[in-house]
Length: 171
Image (tube, rainbow, N blue to C red; front, top):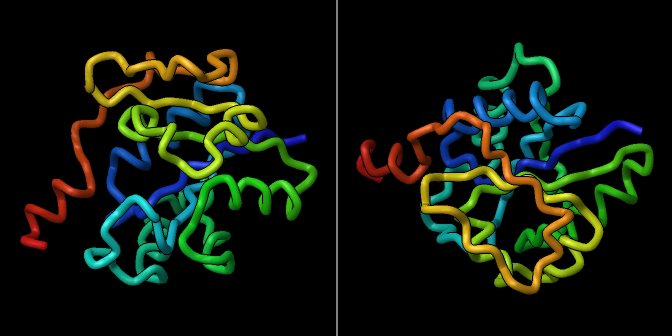
């Protein structure tokens, strides 16, 4: 059974931080692969600034084209919108019963994880890898099952964000 890390995001745009983290996770954890899952419609983000989903997918494919263990995925493109991670993980498990899935999220998302739809279901059924993002140490949700949460404390810090890139471009 292959262990697959799901690294979902808008990737608007994809950047060296996304790619560097995904590569580091494959090289330094027990995950066999990381799937960069392009989200067409994140319910917690403003959709008006999103580039076309096919363009974002093409950009992710280009960014990871020669990196072993990394794969670009459009799996959510065929699911109901908005894209809820709990639904995506359920559907991935049905479509790929031969794989064991984990979730990879940034510390910024971990801090609001209790706002995610069915966050308890996710936490109970899927290991969660949390990437620190220099926010101070992550607030630990008191009601979370910490045994399923893996902090990637040794991961390098990538000082870049898609928002910063868009702001530099004037978007």
